[in-house]
Image (cartoon, rainbow, N blue to C red; front, side):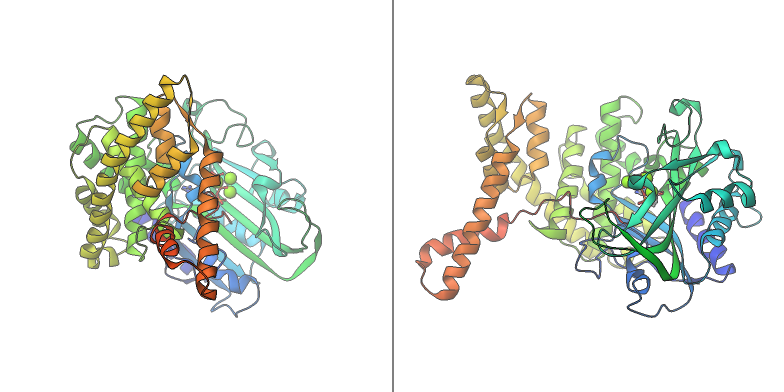
Length: 476
Ligand code: ATP
Ligand code: MG
Ligand code: MG
Ligand code: MG
């Protein structure tokens, strides 16, 4: 079943069951606490918080998501992309635990002729939160899942909250057993690659207090109105329904990998390291197109930095695969052609997306040339002095003058057998930020030597560094 059909079927399954279909919101979150949308529930947050009245008691959507914290997993696990689509069904004070479980089970196991996805019920494993006896009883007694395929997991996996006082509640996840070729048996609690998580059902039933940490907080009581928030990964379901080994081999990403192999002459399946690079390229190029499509432009802070980092990582991996010239136009065209079927605005905006992406490619290729020379000299000097760690000021210089994201420096140094003094790098970044701020303040009060200010201001705009691990939190 193609991705487009999975999406269409999702929406019609839930529309037939009384849900109002809502189009995906932009990746640029309309929420000051988030840079990018990491989950399907984000556009509905005001309804869950009771700030705005929902348009209908039941809605469904297929939401574009970006999760920057998953970047390191891309290509290495079989199931993490920086961009993916989260299919969701939501109830605002309407159906609750039993209704959500029943709907999820039907959607997955109803036959394809009957509007479902036709999964074999025996391959499905369920997890519930430690003390959620109610959910376990529904799965076991109402749905008929054997007790040995229901496992209990702790807060990290199976309890949801937004990290602040407000709604929270236990989750129940549906996992698919991909069989012994993916490792040992024992259920999702033991092996999360074999028993791949496909769908998370969140039962928002309690109100939490502040507590003293993300996982340690008091439950103040029941919410006046209980809600349902669910998220199913479209690419993960596609991976199962298309019978492929990982999400990068599904229809919409495979074509990008194929184009990358044509451009580099590297065969997919030849070697682990080149396979990982091909997957990174496919994922990152798609994410770049989706971000530019929603209006993000490459830059040195915030969303722009997420995009720059992802695009540069894709281009660099193409070079590791042997590409020498420009590659971005060919690759983004494939993404626009395939994703454009579901997101027609990509096709309308093709020219703009190309212009932004090609400019970034040109800037990076120039930077790569200059930066690589500096890096190579620094590596030679470090090794000659018997060192194994590249100094923080070298990483800073590469970032400052050549726009090298720190992970690029880390990767390139590692290829030469060196680590990098990351603390030193961050210290220098912080010093520069502090200095820029102090100078800006001095300028406002009018007591500064303006020539010195100008010098800093010229570089400050280009060097603002915001840590990216925290740029897009996870929330479903
Ligand atoms: P995992 O444990 O595999 O990292 P998760 O628990 O972080 O997944 P949720 O936050 O529960 O994921 O998101 C709901 C669903 O979205 C998941 O069940 C999965 O199908 C999908 N999903 C989450 N992260 C990704 C990703 N990086 N790439 C593709 N699909 C994802
Ligand atoms: Mg995760
Ligand atoms: Mg999980
Ligand atoms: Mg989950």
